[in-house]
Amino acid sequence: MSLIAKEIEARLRRLLADLAAGDDAPPADRLRLEGLCEAAVLTGELASRDLDDLLERLHSEYFDMSLSASLGADWRVYHPFPQLPLYMRRAPVSPSTAE
Image (cartoon, rainbow, N blue to C red; front, side):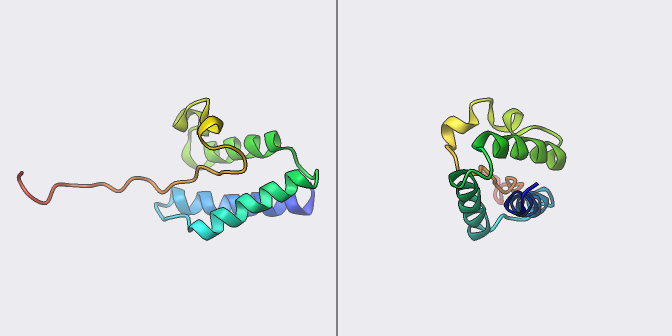
């Protein structure tokens, strides 16, 4: 595994671990990772399909469901490469009034 592939996996694991713990994924970290993924593809180090497979595998590892199961099989239509659809879990919201 190349150095850039190892770094992408390490950063993706950190972001997914934070999200799985209920924390937010800082936009700067996500955007830097997207740029790193794009650079890996542009330089020929990795194919975008390899990165999608990694994202699917790690999402399943951290959330017990694939990204396709979470967002739908066509998630790349709505999040074209190099976008990473990494979101904080929705906060539990309770009405503060009876209305």
